[in-house]
Image 1 (cartoon, one colour):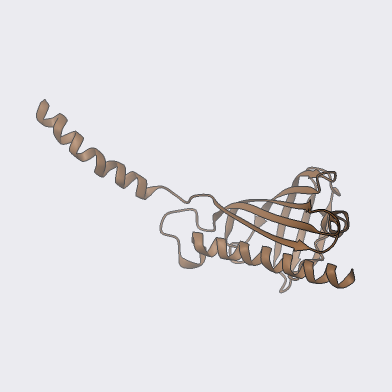
Image 2 (cartoon, rainbow, N blue to C red):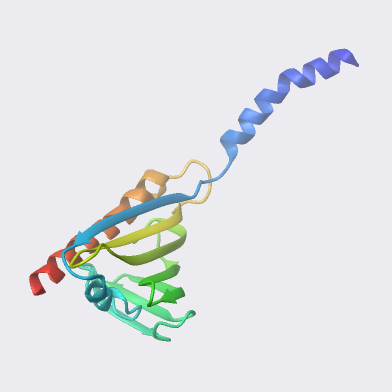
Length: 178
């Protein structure tokens, strides 16, 4: 009895190590920001409509229904023709914040699963504001041993690229327009 208990205790770390290695993907998080030399109200006026993502350089068209009410839907058509479908979860104009999820996307377009995002504008005083875009998601391949284009690093890189490209273009357009 003592011998089998000792043997079991010796095997326990191996079993735990094996189980830890076998778990699926972990939730990834990304946050990008940009400061814009305009008042927060003006920046929010440019990005605060869930049905209009024309400020992002890879969006050709936004179609949707439901306005800015929770449950509103939108279909984003990207340059090249791919689509992303999203749903608005929360909208707070007073706080200049919207929270949404992707309900459908081909992982070849954006290598993520279970994606949620918050887009928010902070007032930095006077004529300065900060746009914060953050998201949480799982990689495109939900099982163990993902291919390189669907692993955690690929998902993080893709989302960072979407955020950075959009925020940089937003700053350029808004500051040029004054």
